[in-house]
Length: 141
Length: 116
Image (cartoon, rainbow over all chains, first blue to last red; front, side, top):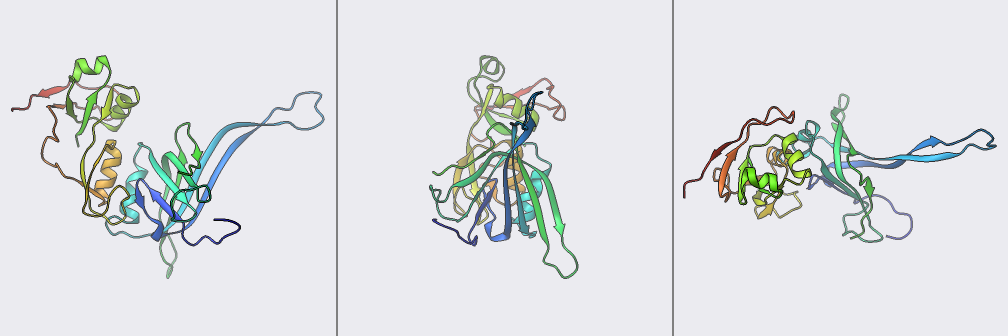
């Protein structure tokens, strides 16, 4: 994929389950804590990088059918065992122009099972964070 | 639910033997034993029930090695079923280890030798 593009065919795999057809929004964050390393005598602030933090916020249409949103996601909120969560910009195979955004050891910390007002289509938001030293990776194969 | 393991370390082999064993470990104990290099999870056969599981097409079987919590999530979610449910999964011996609710300590293992 070259140049700007519109996100229409993102791939979302949570614990080995493809839920792309139930999702409509994803936010991937790969950040480093900012630490202040400024010493006396400095004339400018010196910012240092601290520990990394990686997270994925995924918004899905709620679906209580077997194998769909709730059945797949809800067991993960009480689980302490990590799962892999992968997002790609398109459903095509991993490549240099379609890298995976991978949290190989993710834990789910937030599951908003229902987030809707009267007349709305019920949505659910789940937040995964890195649990381990691998952080967010971007494999191309 | 039990899972199948193979002992890797000397201390684990002295406790569980060299073969494949079926143990009922808590998620905490399983993680501790596996990450500590004492046990490895032995793959077992699963059938894919859903149309969106990536390991194999719906209706097909495959060999997978899952931690107990991930397996429970996939089974309760309607994605997988054990093909060997109700059997010993090919284990050469069957052991039961009572967990203490995931706090780390284990009760004395109770061994049941399989009748051949």
